Amino acid sequence: MRQGWAVLALATAMAAGSPAVAQNFVDIKPSPAQVAWQDLEFGVILHFSTNTFLDREWGDGTASPETFNPSEFDPEQWMRAVRDSGAKYVVLVAKHHDGFCLWPTDQTPYSVKASPWRGGKGDVVGDVARAARKYGLQFGVYLSPWDRHDPRYADSAAYDRYYEAELTELASRYGDLVEFWLDGAGSGGHVYDFKRFVETLRTYQPNTLVFADTGLFEYGDARWVGTESGRIPYENWNVIDRHGSLRWRPVEADTPLRNLHWFWHPNDEASLKSLDELLTTWDTTVGHGGQLLLGLAPDRRGLLPDSDVARLHELGEALRNRYRNNLARAHRPLPAEQALAADGDEETFWSAPAGSHHADLELDFATPITFNRARTMEWLNDGQHVEKYAIEAWVGGSWRRLAAAQAIGHEKVDLFAPVTASRVRLRILSSTGPASIREFQLYNVAPTTEEARQLAQQPAP
Image (cartoon, rainbow, N blue to C red; front, top):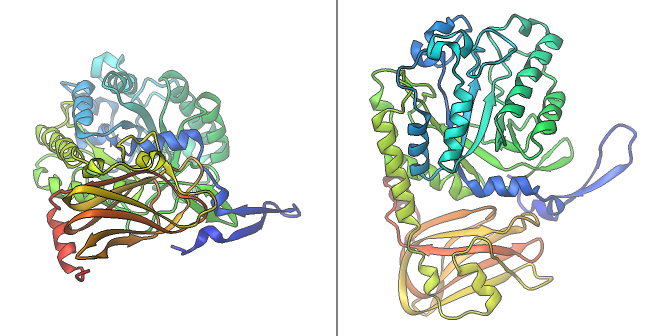
């Protein structure tokens, strides 16, 4: 990623022959909907369709609707497990690439209406939406642009009308949608009218976040991380540049709970990710300022497998235990505004002095604390401003640097060897304007196996 991007002003011509429009990275701010979405941090995406019954990942559009017939369909069981994991939102794959629709659409007979499940009167989308909201989760949908079943796909204009009609049904029948997922897989060079699709979505759902690959720059509100590892391996800036235009596009990193498998498969227990893997993924996604979207797959019964439910419960418990004891809250009294960064309340924030481009936030403790993890959050409503920061502890009569990086963004988790100190400080070494810090938290948490290995390879401070 570029370093020092925020001090550069870019002049760009927005259209041929139009006047140059000055843009500056630091002036780009998120919408209120983007701010609220980023605060959710962790969601799940659900894959459940004819593929579930055919041991497939990608259907070819030839599966009979009679294939879809879960015997114990219970989306409330799914949502209890999702809630217990700590996730805050759910994205349901309403139509995958095979074209089979999980709601009784009026646009094609290739849907649950033609299946034996509930005598053709069922509605997976509606049932999942109600279950999600019952358990305090926000709900969104995935509608694949690629359709390997419908013959209209060969005619771009006809298919775009078909897709738009499907989208209208989903956007108008199922309440508020937190996210609309545009998957760029497949398509074979097919050109879609994405501008029209998003305008239709906005007619019914003005606050829905549109997820899309970075290539759909003008139409997306959030961008793909670039892999299905669920990890963000780079300094995470929310503002990106395409063709001389700047947009606020936070990252959502998707990865399945089972290695390489989005849909359920029989005899597949070995693919279930370990708790250590999931925690490391969380640290390198949410802990790098992005969203984690974890893929879940109900089985042929219409239930999440018991082992998946147990693993999700373990994940939620581990995350709650990790962040239960914020040691920073034991600090000695601070000036009132500085205390807002260490009060455990993400609705408050400390702002560095007016006009400043660097500042220190120091915490003093009556007795030394031992910690090995810092969780820092930037207040992003006014944009992302921190360009370089460090975390230091007073050890042996001098300041020892524990961690240093560029971006903080929505949230940054820094890991380091355990240190015992009575003074700790967050140093804003460079910012485009006064830094605003929602939280500076300290924890003593056992690292995962992978994290311990990485820490052992780091040079001594």
